[in-house]
Length: 87
Image (tube, rainbow, N blue to C red; front, top):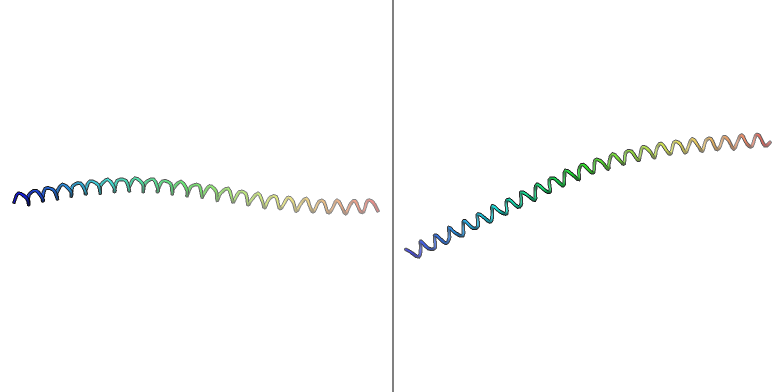
């Protein structure tokens, strides 16, 4: 009977140790999960920022293309005027 009591006590001790280790692992996991969630929020924010910058750059590109076409048109008109003037 004393052997049985000893084994039960040993089992209870191991069970408690296992439960404590499990609780610690759960805490570590929750901490890491919070870090990951925070990083995801940060990355989503950066992605939105980059998308905004991209739209701004695309808008500038269209503006510059419009200006270039305008300058090319002016250049063509000046060329035509110079030809008329020279003849």
